[in-house]
Length: 315
Ligand SMILES: [Zn+2]
Image (tube, rainbow, N blue to C red):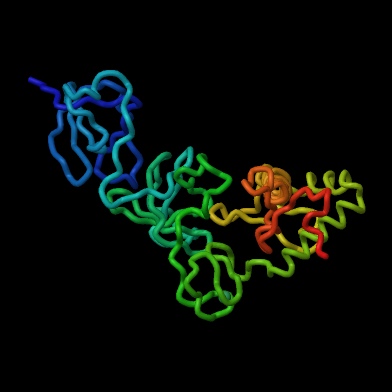
């Protein structure tokens, strides 16, 4: 006599032959399938279906029978297991994982698309990741999808904060406190040795050069040139000066779309519209000032009056 204790929530759950997410899932259980939990191990539950089939699933995703959530598909995502906060997920199509960061050795596992991972360490293009069950392995860092990466691209940080190395592989000095960048030479963590931040002088020089090129080509020439090379993470000045805009988590040159937002949308907003608004607020201060003072009136404590009869004319 089969008596179900749980049901599969909306969206279904994946099932494994063994409680090991580094192995491929063997099947997907559909929404509403009734199950009996036979055994729990960590976050895993061994379940049995009404036909005698058994397998392992993420216990946190099962809905207890008779619980309000069991009705309808309005299920919320399961709370993350305590202590484990995923930073990345496995992309569409899954990806291989290795025991060691060496692609010349055979991979040791295949991770299922959507598996949640936490990046523990980076080495060159490799990332050591941990699964919610404590499994760890090495994967191609460039293929991982950052959790929440689709949400807020404009002010998103650089993703999971890496552990800074003790010694800089580029200059050999102390890496310093900033996890992303060597404070001595500007080597960027996660990029190949020798890929360093451009100097501040070169950055400002690049802006000036872009402005000069833009004026010389009446704007339109610069735009045509820029649109042709945005896809390489460059502007005309950056191309001439050998600089490139890079998205560090992806370890790739910024895409055309990213460059368009950076160079055209964000620069227009931050470089012109925001300063113009600030300027208007500063220059028209008297409009909302109770003493009709401008800010420079406040500096020297003055107001401005009408004095047609020269009442306050110094003798
Ligand atoms: Zn360095």
